[in-house]
Length: 135
Image (cartoon, rainbow, N blue to C red; front, side, top):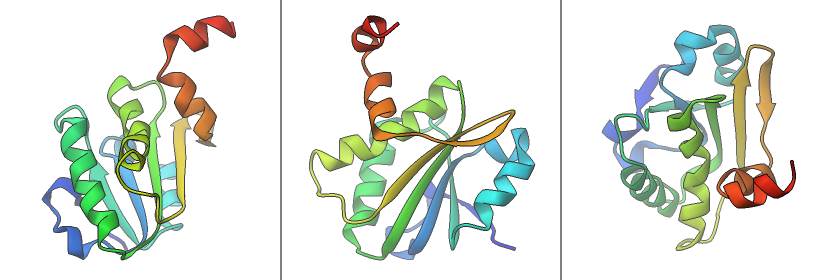
């Protein structure tokens, strides 16, 4: 069984392969869906943006990408959580300074299961003005 490790307490050179960054509460809230994610990756790291400032996570993940050891990254969070939602903004911030070297997927988990989130949806969620216009 793959163990969950804390992203913020892991050395950047230890992270490799197909990686899942998961909101730390997802396992408790949706254990069945967590099991599905676990089967999709080589390594699992938890991140709670309620306790870690997003800028610290951006710095950590930028350093991880710079090692060149990550093949793919998946972000998974609990839907409707204001803290977890920020997790999906991390790659947009990293791409401002580093080119994206690996494929990245985004998912939120609801009562119905996992939902893949598009880049457009992430972009729109950062702009309440744009969202207001498409109501």
